[in-house]
Image 1: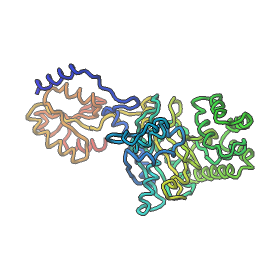
Image 2: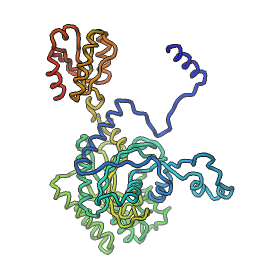
Image 3: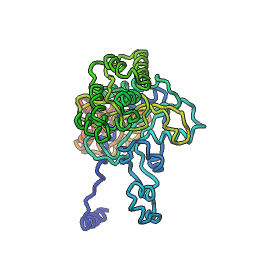
Image 4: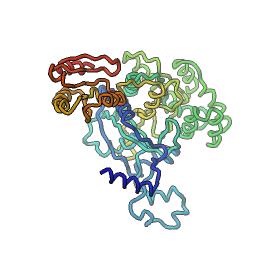
Amino acid sequence: MVAFFGILATNFSMNTQKPSIPQGTRDFDPSKTIRRNYIIERIKRTFQIYGFLPIETPAMENLSVLTGKYGEEGDKLIFKILNSGDFLKNVSEADFKDGAKKLTTKIAEKALRYDLTVPFARYVVMNRNEITFPFKRYQIQPVWRADRPQKGRYREFMQCDADIIGTDSLICEAELVVMINEALSALNIDFTIKINNRKILSGITEVIGKAGSETELCVAIDKLDKIGQDGVIKELRERDFSDDSITTLIPIIESKGGNTDKIKTLKHTLQHSEIGMKGIAELEKTFEYLHSFGYTLNNYEFDITLARGLSYYTGAIFEVKANDVQIGSICGGGRYDNLTGVFGLPGVSGVGISFGIDRIYDVMEEKKLFVSENSSSTQVLICPFDEKTEKSALPILKMLREAGINSEIFPEPGKMKKQLTYANNKSIPFTLLIGSDELKSGNFTLKNMLTGEQERLPIEMITNKLKKA
């Protein structure tokens, strides 16, 4: 066997090719995976408490399902999958001249999912006869975007979604805000929930003389944090907004004060816009529901500049920022009134949120919010002194596992220093030392690897102690 691996290593070195992974993707070692699972389980538990049910959808969708749902910017970031076999067989020279957009539809019929919301809408339409509405679902799966990799922005990342579809009740918006608060508070993250309403943005386009330009306005002001006011003004001009429209717009998006002050100002500004006033009314009703829930939430704010880039939002929109961390939003979402309509089921309203697991991980790592228990799945390591005690340790290992205690045995008896080093390196909190004296007395040595404290106890007492720990 050693000779085989020696030959393998020699052949590998002769055909040297340094292994790599695509830019914007990552490997996760056991410690990181355990911590990611810790985040997911905390959020999943919140979903379950609020009555959401799990679903899963394929990693790939038909390209026609995805395109046209994310706006001009989003559609550019969809990862297309080349058709299998001779993907150029139906392509003519004229197709190449027509440009990439038309050519793509002939060589790629499928794509990796861009988010979980559009596939969910497709799922609802296909399964509408089996679904009980309102339908509350959660979904935790990876998504892919052909974005430029940078801190907090990846090409493959995990989304953790919760949606309520089949009702337009604003109690759902309030419930989602409360869920965000509970899930992120459980992870000890300091955050701010920003809330706006797309109808308010539509009203703003009316009062600045650019009615019907909601998409262009949202795409521009959604970049305010990245490119600043001057950059937004430049982009608005490129999108045919006049200087008069921009001059009217700037004081609106610069409104100061608390939530009540901003709403009061907007009521005056949008008094002649029916859709704008409807958006304000929805926002106020959502705040009323939050108050009725009995939660004191001091970490949410009405942000007039919040636009959310996805074009399918029609009502409330949410975005969550981690405070004192230079990273993008860690959660976002909103109301979509007719996303299922494009798949043949019009008039079904939904609202949802999406947690960015990878960004939450980065925030927790930067703020040192992970505790040692987050880095290992094993609670106790059995350390046998020799082959005789190793054999006697196996029934004990079985007993601990049957009691629900995550346990493992070091596979090489003796070499106690090596065994304890192994436990430390894996952040295993307890070791159970088994030697001939322990077998004779029936009392085994339980060592706390964090404090160094040791005590000799019968296996039943050790089991109970580990359960409590």
